[in-house]
Length: 160
Image 1 (cartoon, helix red, strand yellow):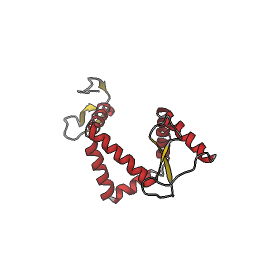
Image 2 (cartoon, one colour):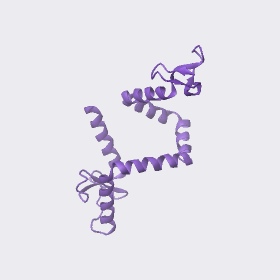
Image 3 (cartoon, one colour):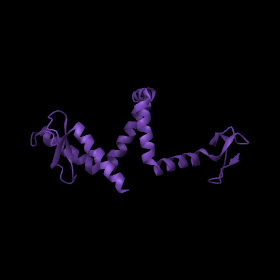
Image 4 (cartoon, helix red, strand yellow):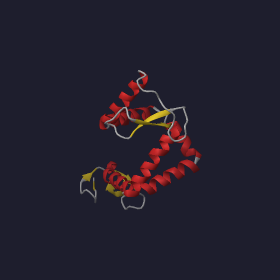
């Protein structure tokens, strides 16, 4: 048994990470507190970590390959399904607007337009500025749509 200096709880040694420089060979805070600290630090320095993650992905081919391989595993499929279910539950208005637009396009009440930015006709998405008006969309190709959201995220980050 060992007491975590962070939460003050006594726990089994298996609840602590091994650490060669500690007298007893285990870190002074439990795994749960360590995970919380790591998450808090990442949230606090999110932009720095995102830049670091992008750098690693672009410069280390083994990282890219590992991510591709993980994407084919059953664990990823389960994790992705769970995340999708959570997203749908938290964004039911968005999902309903997407559903109504999809139905309108399928029933030919609305026709897909060309991309409003580059004029492309392939792989055009309907972008909702207001989800309460599901049939009022901007038509953007996938590349321009991605760029649009990237710019929006960057504007939001600058405000915060």
